[in-house]
Image (cartoon, rainbow, N blue to C red; front, side, top):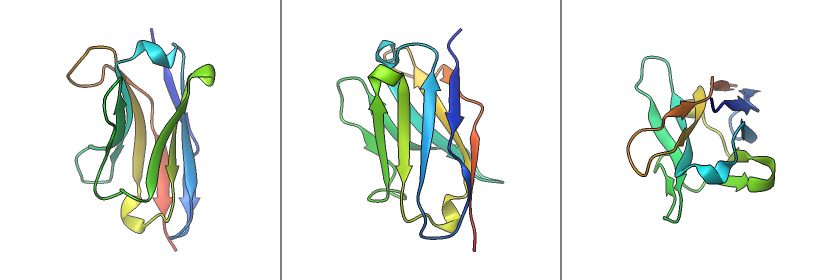
Length: 118
């Protein structure tokens, strides 16, 4: 069973930066896509950024220019660098991976809380 473990969340002030990490128990190159979702209180879960294999990556308009997705295959780790954080970025952030060629992720992490507040 594949496990994804997020870390790096916390309470920060507006304008600050955080880097989230997602460590996979399986080699990340076995997935057809990996990405980050978030869910704010009272809102639906939304896709923040994703990188499908051999395709152009996706970054939500709400975070474009501030968030960057990257990975280190040697460490089986995916990162989400978040700069210039805003209060509206407050949410639980989930790492996700998909083994199929299309569809929803079939592996999820437990989530890490990001709170942006002054």
